[in-house]
Length: 400
Ligand code: PMP
Ligand code: GLU
Image 1 (cartoon, rainbow, N blue to C red):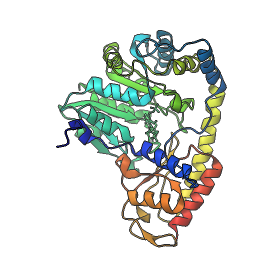
Image 2: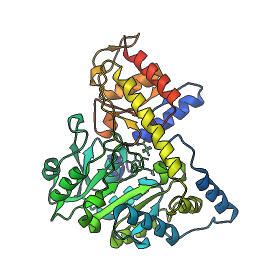
Image 3: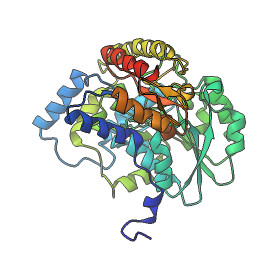
Image 4: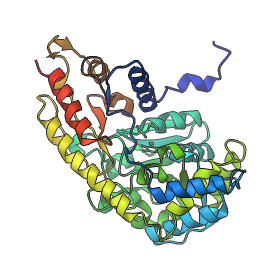
């Protein structure tokens, strides 16, 4: 046994999405012209009002520690936004600001789970849920939902996955990597299955601003779950602020107290500058609606284009996703047959993603990383020109 590392390291896989980002950066540094459909982050600039608030915070020397989990003023502003979104009262004690939504999720699993507990994770899932649950000592229970059901689990599947050890259910709508958005009636049916069960719903709503259909919010549909729901969200996607590392977790005060107890020993809080800037983003009268609407309109146009271009490739199938900025085509038709001028045969989606990076110089994430073999994920948070060029490369590498 390797005594240098803890046992828990044996259950950890490196993040495929972050890993691909690193590989693409290294290739570009070496002068290779790679088009990235990899790591998912808006390609837009953070809106000026937020940037200026960050600059002002530095000038005003707001460079010291804040309260654990963020200043009360920011937590109150986020609570007020949650009031508006869910129609139920939130206060500052029920919110903690975190180092991105990623830390919010990790803290949630650490606060909720003991070894032996089970956490239900619908697949396809965002890569980090599974590893975070394992790091917390719990067991992920994967419930697969394929293209035939729009990548959304239903009540019967949830019922079958529940056990006396079920501690939490992860809901992610709009979803990464599929862009699937649950309808209100579907959420209601899931809620009905959870009645009388001591299960906490971890609702990851990080893509809520980016939808192309009506958005149904979990707590709005299932308000009776307020005392056992943790909402995870943040500024990364809605305000194009991935690098600022500004997320939050919100829910019942006792769970938030536990989460802050962990934060007090782990990160204390995210950057004071990011928190000062976020105060502007979460102000009720923030002049951000136009910037967000323009970003979503651009994503919608790109979604339509990338779906059209993907459908033109023989062996690729996709339905237009309803939210987020990912295309998640089925590519089983490209496997086990010679591809491109060199007649390369790929036996799985990992090999196909490698082939596309190598031969077409486009970075995509294999579906296996999200628990959905036979798919690829393409983030279309990139310019239309890159989408056109990248998909032309994909098509050339996929045709003989
Ligand atoms: N949840 C989902 C579904 C995501 O795609 C991401 C990706 N960034 C996160 C959480 C983490 O977001 P953040 O960058 O704010 O940590
Ligand atoms: N959430 C984005 C993605 O899935 C960013 C990378 C990450 O944090 O995993 O690509």
